[in-house]
Image 1 (cartoon, rainbow, N blue to C red):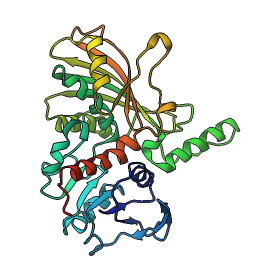
Image 2 (image 1 turned 90 degrees about the vertical axis):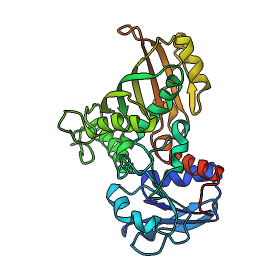
Image 3 (image 1 turned 180 degrees about the vertical axis):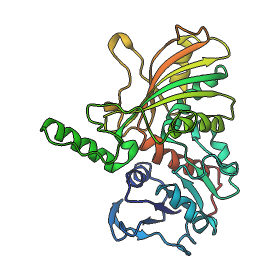
Image 4 (image 1 turned 60 degrees about the horizontal axis):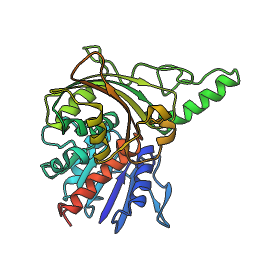
Length: 337
């Protein structure tokens, strides 16, 4: 299998390399692409050294079977045809194609089969917060149709990239040293703070991040589900957390929900409040599953259930999900070569 990574030097690009190695993905030849600035950079993968090549228009993807792209929506749109014109499957981590009607939006635990219907040769990876949420929601949807969800997200600095993580660490050092705080990657100082804005605001008062959770969830789950989200940037380095209130068509007991989560693909149940057992981002960074806990009945809604989930948004929320899509296509014999 000839595999390309576009945006190899970024946080997600680097995670692609780690995930592909961890999962022993079947790679015959690996090609790394990036900007002019990152061209020439070398990376180790399974004992071999690979050099990043500058991404340019042309025939560089002629022999590629799968291209994992994570260089931003503008780059994905600009190079879509170059990547797919010879038959490569483009699995894109940006927001460029997610809501296009002719591009499937896929979370393998929820709607893997959608990946087979890709008339443009493109499969979109959903937003990180959406991926984590729908993996958990699928377990409940299997019990009773979900009518609506209220969700508050607690999103780590890593959601804004490697430079944002470095800035948060720098801010903590500066605050503790009594120095002027550097603020470039966020609207405000994030260290010792919360910022109730991720992405820009839209006309309805919700941010683009919050509207992604509404629109993407409906597309992935093929559902009329309604999602009202508040997305908050928090001063942790990696792994996102979400508090969810779910309304179903029929009441679901806590016991039913726990059994469903325990059996769900891609979910680990951690729910023992008496022993202070519940998921926390500090301990879930770098791990594959979505972790669920704090499951209880919603006191304000007889058909309501509330729970807490944590997932590594660079891994399951980005690179891992994309690699799982590719693994599914290989298993189904749905790759060109």
